[in-house]
Length: 239
Image 1: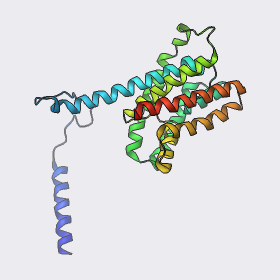
Image 2 (image 1 turned 180 degrees about the vertical axis):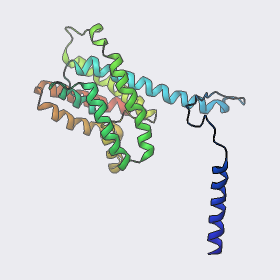
Image 3 (image 1 turned 45 degrees about the vertical axis):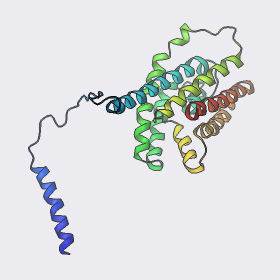
Image 4 (image 1 turned 30 degrees about the vertical axis):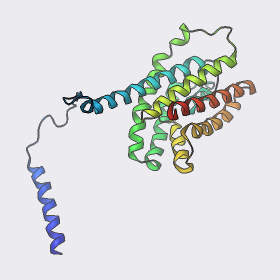
């Protein structure tokens, strides 16, 4: 008991010292942290370089995926990748795709918190916030970029490859866009399959859902997209 009490006394003493410190009026304010490479050559700059590369890949991946969604999937009713694909289905019932994506992401992030842990949720929150922003920003491209006369199969192929590259960059950065990526991570965790294959399984289920609203032809294009996305994603991740 003496040893235990002594250890507890030391812990309480340290806590008391912290509590006795005068409170700074700036404690609750936001801060801006500048990260730069220090003296000492390349090794001293590795942390800053890795951080820059990580967020650059995340932003580029979200941008590419958002462009693919708006230009190739939403306007041509090709149900694809995750919550974005489900939003295309509900868009036919007058539900705004962007609003649906945001709400669904919040619900799935709660699931991720309980089954994948806090660290996984932290990595998904950033992507879940950035991706809808890029969807909103690239929405106007539909009025600028036209694919009149282009075969639907070509649209599906280009869209699938672009979306796969975007998803691969996001995953490689260590982040995620939330949504049904949560389901992909769960499949990876419990079945030991690759992320590309896991997302192909998830997307296949969403494509089946899309068949309840769209034609068989649209479903076939969606399958092409899901297959090409899986290949492109694994190519980016695995090389």
